[in-house]
Length: 185
Image (cartoon, rainbow, N blue to C red; front, side, top):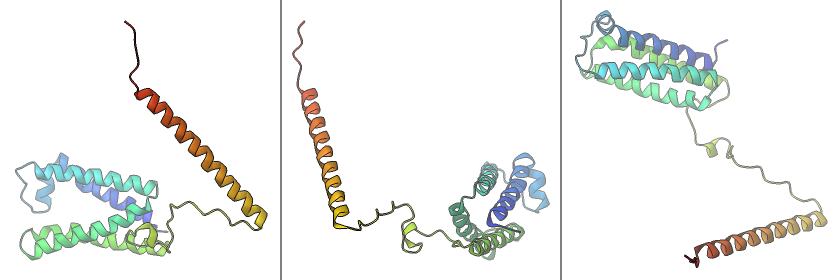
């Protein structure tokens, strides 16, 4: 069965398969796609970034980092849309369309698989997930009787007194430490 993690692994491997040849054999890679080999360093740097992203995708899939999957759906849809836009406006060669079509379809597939697993296909702020902050500490249970309520209040007062004493002690130590000491030579 295909999962979002597996789709991320496949996309990571795909990035490695297109990044490594660009670094090792740039002339052969670009001639295969009928694109002139760039003469500056930007193609090498972008190929290196592609390899790094491939590793990120594989590692995040191995550790099931769902928020990364969700962010990648948005990012991959944006990048592939910008690539299609650049081809339509003559800023890029049409030979890049197959690569970005794969990226676009795989982003849609990852989003669909996330949705099928019960996750949002896009990252949402923590508070918008069912109205709860998933990082918040759960509230202590309400006391059931008046005696329990009084014990809880007494415990809170004892904690406040202890904290006040600690602050006062630290304040005295700080005042004492800041006084000039009389040293004899």
